Image 1 (cartoon, rainbow, N blue to C red):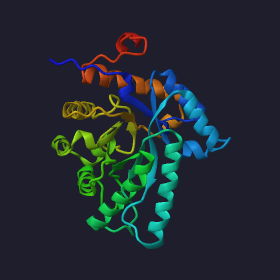
Image 2 (spheres, one colour):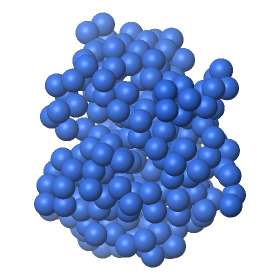
Image 3 (spheres, one colour):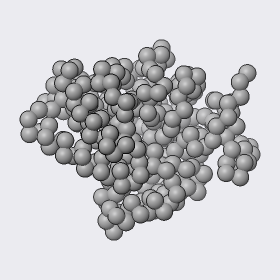
Image 4 (cartoon, rainbow, N blue to C red):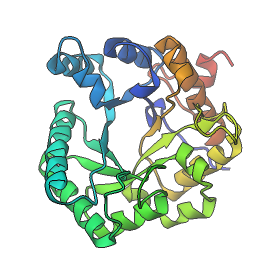
Length: 291
């Protein structure tokens, strides 16, 4: 049996999973042993001392920014609305660049006015990727549950392949995959070098897909384990971000939520992938967690 070696750096937190001010989120994530965090535009623009202060806090934290979210409703638009979204995209890219981040997450358009013409969608994604190239930023395209014409990741993958830009790839969200009933075989469609981000979350109950929980806490434990193992076997070595945003998390201290994420990282790193996940002091995570 192969024994894979990796680091807790494989896993990171999503700031939307945490309550409180930006500095509290950064501190809690760092204290839990993570080295990366997924940030949102709200983290910057809602900072009481302004965006520059928010950027300074992130840089001072020592955390790597996994990605920046979320550019919404970009593709499939026409006329003034298309031009408007181009300007929004430029602003988002600039904010992403200010963090030293090299990945912008965008979600399939939910607007009913958006076209479902494949070539138009491809052209728009290609245009977005071209805007990002001078900034050395990758675009991770994710299918959204509320997407107008693109709802599942095979559809999103088809557009990414058709657009064919080196900095355009796919983002997966396991919670949304569960909600849509995605099959293990669907992952065989993907190429690991074009998979830019995997967002991890389980659901507490099959009939309550609106409640995100950390991997290992929900009822789809084995499905999540199978998907992560398959992605690893396919050669995926990118980041896994815990995308667990629910009302319960928003009512708990950031440190408590971050520790739940740490337990998920332990389970995935040590049990699912059967690998050693050393902390900076080279103590195995299981031992550090008192197992």
